Image (cartoon, rainbow, N blue to C red; front, side, top):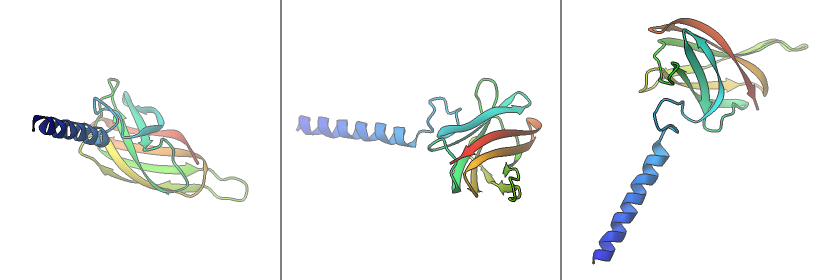
Length: 146
């Protein structure tokens, strides 16, 4: 009887550990963006912005990503209203392309969830602006879509 209870207890503990690992954000401190980094760089006002998703790559088509603004210690910082657009300049006879992303806030201030449609593979510029408690900023991050 004790052996059965011990085995059940071990299975329960193992299940809890697996559940916690599966639901984690990928960071023990909760400061890193969800997933693997696609691009990161200075966002002005002593902040760093990071774009990330599950596999660390934006691909042609519709997809989701996370955008995180953090201070020098890596702690997410609320920047207020954010606009995000991917831009590819004109090439040959093809005009410039702009793919706006839809951003929503998350339960963590400074971390935004985004959805974007990338028209084609290639070099894009993520053009990001923000205005709010952390000030006002505008910057660009290069992204190579697959």
